Image 1 (cartoon, rainbow, N blue to C red):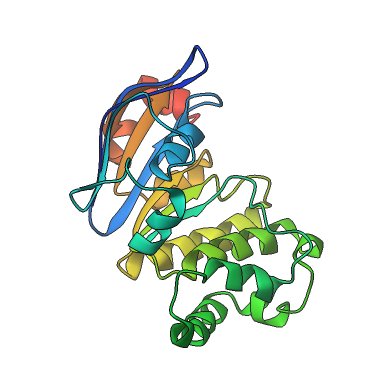
Image 2 (cartoon, rainbow, N blue to C red; image 1 turned 60 degrees about the vertical axis):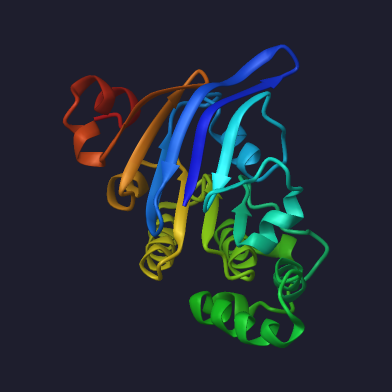
Length: 233
């Protein structure tokens, strides 16, 4: 579904990504792991067209994404759930979700909203609450729900467990697992060992902007150096 070839990204003169090649299959979950500063968030921003790569290609279902602005990607079925959740702070939960639905025909919005509320019952309870007053876990659910509103075929998720308690992380894992099982392709950047161990089909390891390994979780765990460095095991 998504193919990234020979991707190079700079911030000014600083190299952020170097010769990165990643493939995301149609259906299933692909994870990208690595230490802080490895280039994981930069990768998702490049896919979403929030930053411009200096070299390389990004194609979605065989079509180059580099010629399109970010809003066009949403119309194509690519949703991005950013690091840090980032709700529109002065808007209600419902208003945040409706912003996520801006690419949908008007007659589809209510049905999609009900699907999000089925996935996140707490958001239905909080629909009229100002989003900045939600807990961290509720804000993460809102961020995923807002991305889910466009009925994506590819969902990009950046550090969904960041700053959350273990109990809430378990709930986020259940939700992302359900999205995966629904047939949506997921590309997830994550540092939480539990999420990485249980959810992905394929894992890519980034370090200092370079792709150093790809394989299944069991293959990484079978490599003593990799599992100790990136899984702490």
